Amino acid sequence: MKKQNNTPRKTAPENASPARHVLRRLRIVAAFASILIALAAFIDFRDLVPNHLKHVYTSAQFVPSVLTFATAFHATALACLLILALTFAFGRVYCSVICPLGILQDVISRISAKIRRKPPYKLPAKKAHNTLRHAILAATLLAIVAGWGGVALAWLDPYSHFGRFASTLFRPLAVVANNIAATVANALGHPAAIPQVNVSFAAAGALLPPLLIFIAVAIMAAKRGRLWCNTVCPVGTLLGLVSRRALWRVSIDKTACVKCGDCLRACKAQCIDLRAAEIDFSRCVACYDCISVCDEGGVKYRWHGVSARREPRGISNRNSQIPNSIARPPSRANRRAFISTAMAGTLATVGATALLASRGIAQNGGRQGKGPKGPGQHGQGHGRGRDFSKLDNPEVVAPPGAQSVARILSQCTACQLCVSACPSHVLEPAFLEYGNLAGLMKPRLNFDKSFCNFDCTVCSDVCPDGTILHLARDAKHTTRIGLAHTAHPRCIIVKDGTACGACAEHCPTGALQMKKPPGHADAVPVVDPRYCIGCGACQYACPVTPKAIVISGIAKHETAEKLVQEQVAPTTTDDFAF
Image (cartoon, rainbow, N blue to C red):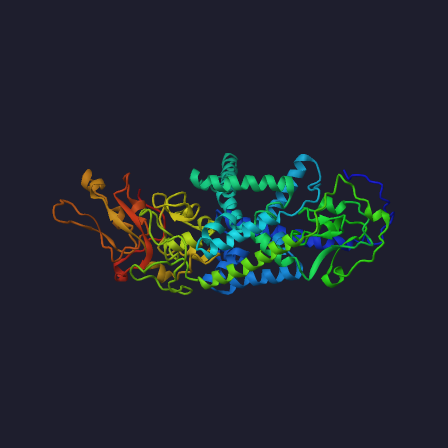
């Protein structure tokens, strides 16, 4: 219920025009469409959404676009420049309309308000946490300069956070709901109406970080609106620096404002200083709620040349009355705030320059063998900081198109779109399989769970940040991501005398063949490393546990030789005899 005060209100406000709702309604429609596309991209367990649409939407997010611009430039990389231009022109419209995490926070706030049966925002104005937010931005940019960009952005990029929430938390719940509906449909005599889908949950170690971060984001959104965006998120801070001098801004008309406090109750960013009749536009997320609720027309969206004019002195007494229970206005920016802002802007420039200068940051060290050459792939570079070129765990395998484990660790932001889109579900978020915390939540191939389809290039088709570079199908056929190794004492042919050969039967390159080596009565699987690409079909097909044939990852991907096509029967299905 709106708090009462003694301020006289106009009985028939001249400025109470329905047009004041237009911007807010357009923003809501656009944000609703945006989050639906994002959810569809990550929760698409029936593979109904085309991969190119997933890629276009997700690569238009700010951080993926910046990374693509710096490491594997193509048309979608221009999205970051467009976002910066929109921010300079209109403010943080990215945060309110495009960023799925920001929109998710608004949804959580609304749901919380419905549960509590209170207005979604009844928040006093708060002083900006500039020191903290600028420190987080500076730390992120310094991590990029030091070669730890993939680690820092994996923990701080808002799009990647949403991707992990959707892929790790929301998608399994959607599959469970689908299977419940399928069970009901089957009980009603319509077994084909809703097909069952296998549920795949991430390992506990990979599930816990996104779960804890989601809880933190949800609590902050329910209690304080966009506090996460204006305190923790480095993208919000960077765009806030740009939007401080936006050409079009939300501002308060001192001649029309009656200090009723409606705008304070509507503001999800707590950025309105009603006493000074000013708005901290670096924190304003351009939701336009304040404009919509102002019956007096005191909050307007206008050209900065108009809003920057000095207001005449001698404002009436009614404009100085502010309900103390509503407003705790922040102080004006002082010299220290100006210096911190200038430093953050300088660091942003330095960080962007360093990122562009280190386009080969993910490919440290010498090349091991001949690497796959394909469109959009670059030469080697030498990043600074942690040396990711050494493979800490030989059992971990990076996705084809990633070129190396180093590229995954130093550049991937762990959004897990490739994990969600993988048709064979061989990709899963890693825990400590990469051997260090830099690999936490990054994609890896689990060949005990499935295998990498010979003709599949989905992960390289959807990757939004350029970590997994696009591979043509022919290039995928010869891209070596690992090597198969046999353990004959475990093989049922040697151990039990049982005929098998499943591994050789399903090898798509002909690298694994049944031969009778000296000392063996029966033919056993033998690997020719020249042709092996490490797809995992042999390991997945092996019927024994532990496996008699396993794939060992390689630090830097290579190009395998190709057998005569007639000798090869490519595997394009996940149907195995075992």
